[in-house]
Length: 467
Ligand SMILES: [Cu+2]
Image (cartoon, rainbow, N blue to C red; front, top):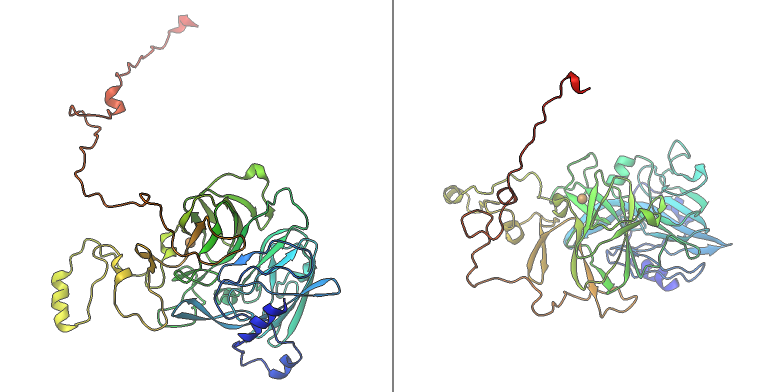
């Protein structure tokens, strides 16, 4: 625990809100913060009941201290700079140096005390989404507590009564504070072996959030309701999202919460998964069926679970194709099939840099050398072993490897495909295809031609005498 504390303190270049007085903060211990966007290895509990810790994608878990049998955490709400992808930083609000805030991990039955210090320029609160707790600890400004004024620290305390997948976020000026990235994950592990909770070898978690940041600028537009241009996992976009590295035959659990304004059908390649839990708790086994895509509605949380028994680099993404694009993927006219070559030549005489996009589809966008404004990320990008991946936003890769060690989360590099198992170009002559026509060479006759015509029997209505 102390080494982790020291590691986080070393990077404590927090952005202090100008409105918060130094005097008010002087009495507080320096908070544990994290500003690097790397995925932190699981934080193995040094005190309290043991559990198998989660891994927060491009995030980290908040260390705690035990005080008189209570687990104490300290969250600091503050402006942060979040690197959304290499070369692209956003000015967000978050907790302890980052958006989303650190993951809080506790065990069923733990008494938890959370100090929340507000370094924002306006009041805030923290709502503990999905928790059973005393009403006054529910964090709804105006309803169950006054807002935490700038510069003040409030305390929340409750017992984590049921195991499961939860999150936290403000319930104060929500539209602004959640659009600015204030949210975090919460996992309550079962106290003992639970009949509905299997032991997972790898347990990942992340939150879905969306931002509207104009290319070249840094701060999200908070009034946007629908037309977001950055669809993120833990406030990161592809290619800035780490891969989920797992060992072959591991039981993998992925916990996801949705704090965007729309639903996200999450899709995993190469494996089927079941929903083993929601923010309401573990699902009864009789309700579980296999899927490859599951829709996660606004404000919902889902636990996906599968056995990673197929080696490879498996895509994992939101199935809404616009959500796997970055900024500039919106408001671009459809140009497919439009030949601009003549016009472009004419315009180039006047404007040498003029270029037309999209006549052959949008793949060109991934290869284009058009200069981008400073501080933005290409609409679709990412290099794979076979070329451009042409993705952005909510996209990553699950890397399943036979030779990964238990507990090793390092990136194993690209998959080495066994010989003869990759789709390849066909250069020979193509055989005559089987047709469904009746031209005499039919291999697959159509059912309507093959079947004998059915005679329709019409029964005349019987007269009165029949009754
Ligand atoms: Cu989506």
